[in-house]
Amino acid sequence: MKKEILINATSDETRIAITEDGRIAELFLETPETERNVGDVYLGKTGKVIPGIRAAFIDLGFPQDAFLHFSDISDSLDEYSSIIGDDSDFDDEDDDEEEEEKPQQPQANGNRTNGNRHHNRNGNRAPAKEINLERGQDIVVQITKEPVGKKGFRVTSKVSIPGRYLVLMPFGSRIGISKKIFNSKEKRRLRTLVRSALPKGFGIIIRTVAMGNEDKLILDDLNNLINTWNEISAKLKTEKPPTLLYKDASTLNSVIRDLFREDVNKVIVDSKKLHREIVTYLEETSPEFLPRVQLYNGNQPLFDSYNVEKQIQETMRRKVWLKNGGYIIIEGTEAMTVVDVNSGKYAKSKDQEVNSLATNIEAAIEIVRQVRLRDIGGIIVIDFIDLYDDRNKKKLYEEVRKEFRKDRAKVTALPISDFGLCQITRQRIRQTIIHSVSDTCMMCKGSGRISSRAGFLTRLERILQRYKGGDNGFFITLKVNPYLKTYLEAGWLSKVRRMSLKYFIKIKLEDDESLAFDDIKIISKKQNGKDVTEEYDQ
Image (cartoon, rainbow, N blue to C red; front, side, top):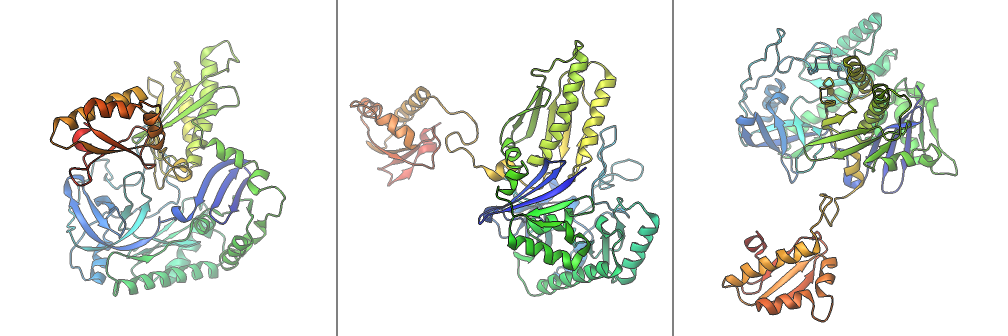
């Protein structure tokens, strides 16, 4: 498989596309408004602690408090507390001896394979550990997920500092190694090398890219990580919460650091500035990768030249066509994402089961690609075309699992149900691409529907009736969307004038661009300009 990283930069935006055999598989966007926060380490202050949901809310200085689940609190809190001056004790479970950069895939029975966080070795659910987290307590946390919708950041106290070859785990004790390093001799070399230089009180994960690299490069990476943690520790002694202790790499730097590996054939960038940054970084960390970095000088825009721009535009569409004439519909909601598979024009065989299986297989490949590309997280339900043969259902399920092995996010997929549904959960770290490149419609506020004009007039009359029934005076200011204002004022005997005469209320009409098409605000003159909308718009 030919894998490339394409980097397009403008004055306001940096776009990074990862392509596989010419088809875009992942897309990263960075703008001043979408600055990357995952990986940042903060000294926060504990707000609400809610044992009922086994979670606490942490003040990091943002409008919304961050969410900390008790399962994300580690033993290292004892160490952090001693630095901060807090004597509270905290418990956590042991980490696995070997940690893998890419999560394990789900087993055939659909169970999660994310370690022994909640289960013991016998498969029984482990008892919940006692967490003595108190309101107002200082705590060191690291951001693991960007805010989504009305939800704030998700954080963990299991802090890790990533480098090119290693991931440092302060106050850990184990040396993990990527399971993608298969050579046992190389594993022993790397473990021995790191163990000999690792100070007491630190844990480490050896990343895949460390395989085959010189001792000096790996040890330099280790020293840099330890120096970084020492700087964080120094800040802990002087800073007051909430404060940023460590800023992780930008989106571009994190992609080069984490994803530029042996399987990447080229990195093509159209910015001289970014090209210099990448070259400078690789000269220090991975000089053998330098020949793969190219500065683009073509006449066409980079993404046009590699047919990426057209593919990005397709991510905004709910309907995606398949090569065989079928298509899929992707609908996102607050609760989940639903994908519907349709056969469309495909009817190659006279056997419906054969046609359905062929369409489903192609759809499964495209759906996984679209999920990765759009970065869809949470619950995903796929409504495949009905299959009646259990062997075909199993074949389709295995195809879904095979495609998801390409995904870096944690994924759990359940077997195809009797209703033809495949239920999937995918790790959510950031907003979907669609939310990153678009805003909620000002007219419908994302619902896709607005009230009819007749329905709005009926609603307005009910409001005026309620207002007239109280002791509110005869003067109101009515704020509506500019388009609706034009509609209400049209004609000599306009609709708003007729209502004013009918209910004997003087109505001053004002436009407000911040309001949706069917939104309304009622301002009472008698109550000194008070907004009384909620009182009368029931």
